[in-house]
Length: 338
Image (cartoon, rainbow, N blue to C red; front, side):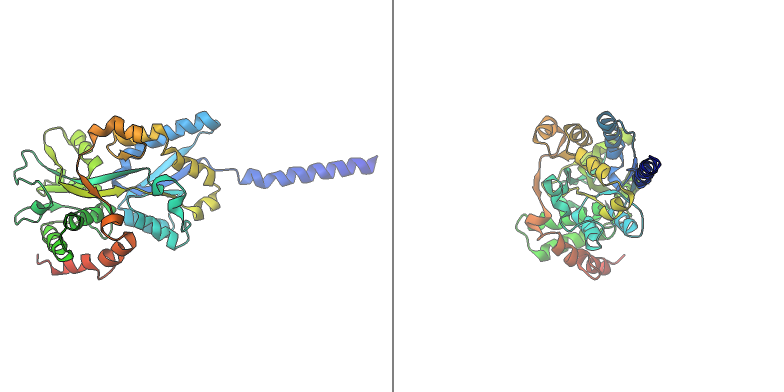
């Protein structure tokens, strides 16, 4: 009898000890989303919606923390040790850097629908009231005497998309590479200051009063009007522009360490939900859900769109040709006389 009791006690002790690691590694209730500059207001609305939905589904209260900045700087910070559970960027090349360094798998874009981009946007112009310089299309940004505000393409997706929109506006309408280079060179010769992020460029244009035209995401235009008052600025829709897809990814290297993979995936999955797609549309980003897009289509500019893949040879080629050290962008900037 005594031996039997001792054996039962030992088994109970082993069972309770075996349970300790699972308690120690209980899934965390926080996530860090490292994102790009212009998505601040969007995630201020998506995050509480997800928190409420997750609470209703699981009973768990979670906190989503945010970090925003120029997209390339943000990716550099993650590679440098910032423990992002997820990244929500505005172009594929930034996330590809994480894949190249083993932070997320090579097939990251296949883990979610739409190439892992829950929404897209495009690049439009914002001019001052009355459009005193008569700006209508990309060619006008290359005219002498027009000051163009666009962030630095080397460190921010906003700037890269602006650069590529200008380049592609020539190629997509039958122009040559030489003509595209000429247009982009003239536009960047008209740039008085290269900010390190889209929000910095917005501040330069709206608060510092510098520039005749701001090249920015479609979703930023109404935000600026709401923040600084209707009537101070006007949207100008060019005849053609680039479709800017905003991909997301799990940072597996971090989620494995923190035990946050399930929560992080649920958070990204939520961005394709009808509720999140509504929030996306109301922030003037183009939702992927066809029904939600149709409901809000009056919000979006009507213009011809092209993509990096269709018109410019894909992100790998664009990155190597235009934005690598010594590439076309660096050559253009070196040739500009200030």
